[in-house]
Amino acid sequence: RLAIQASSFRNIMEMRSAIEQKAAALAVDRATDEELEQLRQTVLDAQTRSGEDDLDFFFHYRLVELSGNSIFMDIVNTYFKEIRQIRDSNLKDASYVQQVNQEHLAIIDCICRRDKDAAQAAVERHMERIWDRWRMRNSGAEET
Image: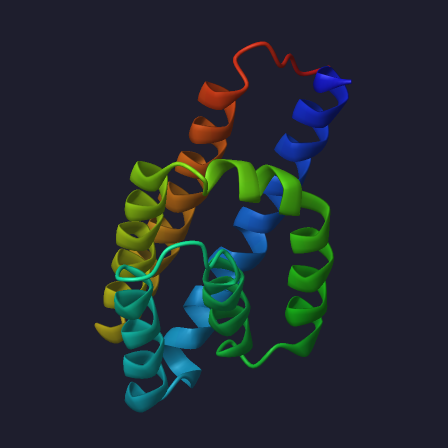
């Protein structure tokens, strides 16, 4: 069962990375400074709260929403339902929550600088780290 989970999770992460990188690039052109500052404040506020895993969903959904692509938003809804158990498990670790918040802030900073390449690279690093953290927590999982 873990082998299937690892393979499925890897596939979701690859798709997620592609969509969210494009969403970040579009947000560079389409999001207002005010919208980005509100998103940054939400992430900063999340650092002082615990047990609010929906803030992670909110960040990713809002990032994609700021791209202006409603189909991307539908896809985010779908894959967050698929990976909720894995995400919830990862976010129980306080050090992971702090890392995730810092990664989110790095993405926002790149978009605020209106740097598409840096924003896409920050999303890619975040997705790689999510995958790395999942594999560390599930060292017995093998891909098929």
